[in-house]
Amino acid sequence: MQPTGKNQSNFEYDNEEAFRINIGTMEKSGKRRWVYPKKPSGKFTNYRSYVAYFLLAILVILPFIKLPNGNPLFKFDILAREFILFGFPFFTSDFFLLAIGMITSIIFIVLFTMAYGRLFCGWICPQTIFLEMVFRKIEYAIEGDRAKQMRLDKQEWDEEKIRKRLLKWTLFTLISFLIANVFLAYIIGLDALYDLMVNGPIENFSAFFGLLIFTGAFYFVFAWFREQACTMVCPYGRLQGVLIDSQTINVTYDFKRGESTTGRAKFKRHEDRKTLGKGDCIDCGQCVVVCPTGIDIRNGIQLECVNCTACIDACDDVMEKVGLPLGLIRYASEDNIIKGEKFKFTKRLAVYTFALILLLVAMSSFILTRPDVESKYLKVPGTDYKVEGDFYVNQFEYTLYNKTNANQDVKIRLLSHKKAKVLMFAGENALTLSKGEIIQGRFYLKIPMDEVTSYKEKIIIGLVNENGQIIDRYETSFSAPYKYE
Ligand code: SF4
Ligand code: SF4
Image (cartoon, rainbow, N blue to C red; front, side, top):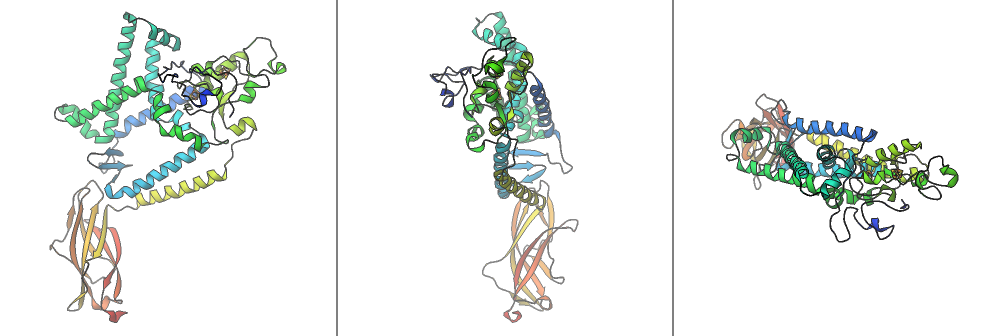
C-alpha cells in the first residue's frame, strides 16, 4: 500500500519514505523514543477487553483443573522431562508428536496470518494482553493519560512523582510476581507450587529462584521493554512481509477515501470537502497518538503494527464528531480498499487449509490411539527356532514403555495362536512398570506344531493389563522349519 502524505508518527523522519527503513520508536542515534499512547476507548477496545479478561481467567484457572486420572491439563516441566498436553503425558520418545505439533502450528500460523493478518497479535498474544489490558491500565489509573504521563516524566522528583512512581512500580512488581506464579504452576505443577508456598523458599530454593527470574523478566518486559518485544524481538512480526498479500485482512487506512484527490486536510465547519477534493482524513493525528507502537497507520502496513485496533476506535470517534462515515481506518484488505473487492478464499489458502486439516487429523489420531503402554517385540538376533516336544520355540526380546503417570501391571500374551505359551526368562508372570518407565527383557514363545502353517508364521503379540484388557498389539513373525513353505 502506498504511503500517503505527511506522517505524524513519533519518529522524526528525513523524508516521507524513511519509516520503511526505521523503527518508529527509535531515534536516529539508536536511542529509544518512549511511547506515551493515549488511552484508547471505543467499540473494539471494549471487545478486546472482554476477550483479554476471558483469556486471562482461563490462563489462571487451567493449572487448578485436574483430570480424573490425577493429571493436570498442561504441564511443561523441562527439568524433570515431564510434559502433559490436554491431560496426555508425553515422554522423550514422543518427540515425533511434538515435531508434528510444531509443523501443524507453523502451518496454522501461516494460514491464519495469510487470511487475517496479525489478528493474533492484537487479540490473543499474551504480550499484548498483559501490556495493554493489565500494566498499561494500571499506569493510566495512577499517572493519568498521555499528556499527564509526559508531564510527569519531565517533572522533577517531587513528592507527587515519587509517590506515583513508587505505587506503580510496587503494583507492577506484585503483578509480575503473580504472573510468574501462574507460569510456574504450568511448569512445576500446582502441587509443587503449593509446597513452595507452604515450606518456604529455603527448602525449595530452585523453584523459588525460578520464580524470582520469572518475576524479574515479566517486570522488565512489561514495565520497560514493552512494544520493543513486538518490534525488535518477536519473529512473527518479521514474517509478515512474506505471509500477507493484497487479500489479507489487516487494520488498514482507507487512503482512497482519506486522501481523495487533493489529500488530507484540517476540518473546517460548513466546508464541502468532496467538491474541493479533500479527503475524509482531517489530519487530527488521533490515530497516531493512540498507537502503542508509535507509528502512523496512514503510511500503510508496517511491521510495527500489532493490529491492536486502537487507531480504528480513535478515528471512528473523530469521524463521528465531524459527521463523516465511520471506518476510515478499519479491518480491510488492500484489494478491498483499492478495488472494493470482498474477501476471497484463494487457491493458496485452500492448499494450506487442506494441509492443516490433514495434519490435525494425523495428530489427533496419534494422540487418541496412543496405548498406555507401548510394546515392541523382536526376535533375538542370531537365534533360530527350536523343537521342544510338539512345540516350536523362538526367543523374543521385548521393550515396554509406560506412557502414563501411574504404575502399570501388564502381561505378554500371544493373541494369534490359542494354544501358544509365553515363558518369561526371569520367570515373572506379570511385569510392573512405574510411570514413564521403559523396561526390556526376553521370553520364549512356544507354538504347537499343529497351529503353525508357515516357516515365517505371522503372529500377533498382545499386552494385557491387570483387568485383562488388551492395551497394545504388535504384529511380527515366528520362525518355523522350511517344510511349511
Ligand atoms: S484519526 Fe482519522 S481523521 Fe484523524 S488523522 Fe487519523 S485517519 Fe485522519
Ligand atoms: S497502527 Fe493502529 S492497529 Fe497498528 S499498532 Fe498502531 S494503533 Fe494498533
